[in-house]
Length: 355
Image (cartoon, rainbow, N blue to C red; front, side):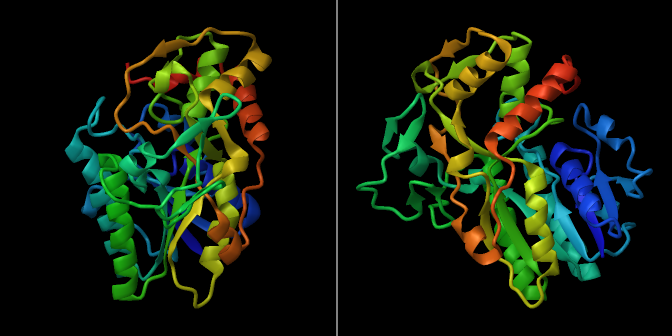
């Protein structure tokens, strides 16, 4: 089996590639990356020794895909992963759409040409921002928790939101570009008979991730706390009670292999994340860091940040039912892995700085 992994020099793409090769040494992997993100060059080293053929290319340019060899599957791990992309920082709205949507179109056209399957790593941020913001919350152990009783919409459970939760806009430009990519992927699958699987991931986290405040928050927080860098709770009263769940990307691989090896199965949309067992608030994460590294004062910013939500946890019951998949790396193990990496790489955050 030959697999193309886009974004192979990023945290998720490289982790998935290494895990795939570890489980199936006979796999042939072709990697693609534009190497534009600071720090990505570090993950470029060593692919040749692992037998991976690396193409320096950009999925936004259709011509860059013309020289790629035929493959059986494409795992799309290339994206601008920041929910603030296109509205703040260095990325323009056009660049975001070109990367996350036009790039998907180019990859789907490639899949159509070589008759390959497509595995899209999507995001939890396709779920409706106003619907999430309007959820009634209570506070338990320094963390927000939704009050499900009396909720009249679909897709809310005590274990997280299901695939039936509203995707009504606004979502964010980032979320909208991923949702549009999902729809196009499923349409290409139906129109051209291609196996297409959409895996909506929660926050992906682990050692080696370049953390920033708008992405890679677990890595950013743990590395920042250890270095005693300025940290602050933004919005929601400055309490740090906002909650997200996380997943180690290597836990994706068992599901991806099942999807690639499925015979006669049709694609669809799945929540693929850590769920309630892997959910933590920033305040709870701060307490964990304090026990590990010692106390560090966290500031407060009472201004609400664009696109922030108080709670977003994905329920993964469908993935368990359809594919017998569940995360295997406990939350504590993910946090400990990042902490050990922070201890051995004290300047890690500087490597991903745009400065």
